[in-house]
Amino acid sequence: MKIALMDSGIGLLAAAAAVRRLRPDAELVVSCDPASMPWGPHTPEEITARALAVARAAVDLRPDALIVACNTATVHALPALRAALEPGLPVIGTVPAIKPAAAGGGPVAIWATPATTGSSYQRGLIAEFAGSADVTGVPCPGLADAVEHGDEAGIDRAVAAAAALTPPGVRAVVLGCTHYELVADRIRAAVQRPGHPPLVLHGSAGAVAAQALRRIGAEAAPSALPTGTLTVLLAGRPGTLPEPALAYAEGRLLHAVAPAR
Image 1 (cartoon, rainbow, N blue to C red):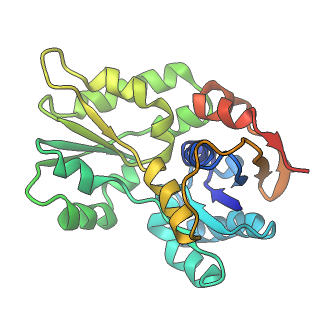
Image 2 (spheres, helix red, strand yellow):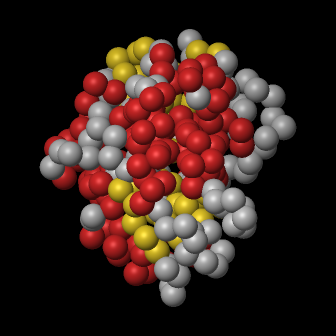
């Protein structure tokens, strides 16, 4: 079983690690282009072209499924990716976990890039899945960039700025960018208010990984022998995980996986 994941940068680590935990025997292919990151400021046409290039590099290795582990690429390029690759290859997009967050009761905040926060896509998801929940969109300028480069001071500044925009009564935070899942503990610590109920964070990595297995008719087998391998593609060329990836638990987990031969 071979699962490919694509993103602009290392935001795909969370979903890749989730697949690894569910199926330690899976062959993983991670395809990204950190030099072109972030994709958000580009036009939808440019994002689609970049996403197709990154995806096709992974598809050349004949995976059984492709996870689009990027909210921005899902927003702008998922229809084009599916048109180009399905039905031969299942393509699984990443959607912010608004529905389960709203179902938990209480006010919800959605942390996302500025482009996603202001998008009709996010407004549509809120209208469709949030029900009567009070939802606040929180733009997080610079956070994905800081995570991508392992910029500790930049992460602290961006998290603090977004926390200041988050209403104090929020019970759940939706992590609307895959990069944010890599610093979930820091987000929780910044938003959790003393005397308030425990804050619940909602990422997408686990659900996306499980959906990829379902699409190919596979079951989770976390106790399987860890015989899986890892292939890293950077701008379509074989490489290794970028150094900043090792600052995160998910990156270290994948770094320990045997490289494909």
